[in-house]
Image 1 (spheres, rainbow, N blue to C red):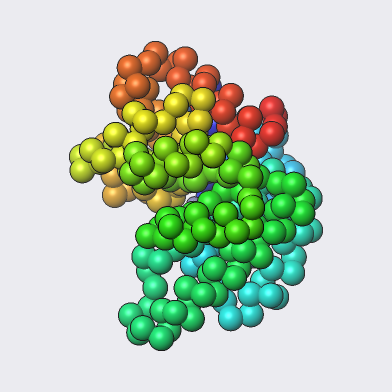
Image 2 (cartoon, helix red, strand yellow):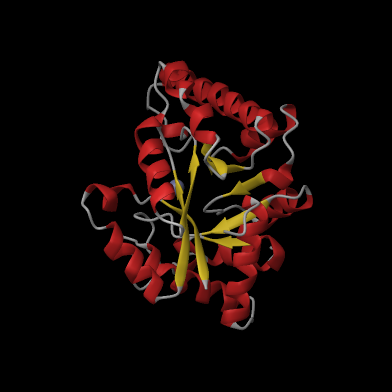
Length: 261
Ligand SMILES: [Zn+2]
């Protein structure tokens, strides 16, 4: 069995295809799903999905690219959703897609940092693990985690694409790393070295669907049913039996999210 530790199921709920998508995943032995919220508009969709399907759990958080000027209002409902969620996420920093204008860049970056810190403190208050989105902002994410004194045992870096050195720093502090379909891409040599540096008891696997479909479906719509392509790739890098690797990732997912649902 596999658990898709990070997926966005919203599109299939809206188009009434969720049953089909789950059935296709189950056929590939992807049995459970952590669907991840990115803004108030999808938190309620995922909370209701999780209440309807035993195989689905959800996270709620404000994604750095969905932060608006009125972020205080956006964050108002978050505590209510956290009482049903298994983690806060995805939250973090994304400096890859900042506006071109320099002064606007600073405003956006600062706002992301403020909202990230606020959510980390809220997670501490609720004693919840967090799922982190980090793009072109590794050092500052590290600094914010440090000055909020966030326990890295409660941190999962999703779709991790960092260097082996960055991985080692996080792993030494107790963090978990989740790998997505990018590890199967031809130009992914660097990330493969990072995977080799990640101990087996800290690896989770995810699709991040509908984005980042693994090879041989690169460029197409990703779905949870494609997770085995990524898992197989990592298992072979680790020279490990596929089933044993899958079991290991399931155990890691349950440990990180503190659930054995
Ligand atoms: Zn995501």
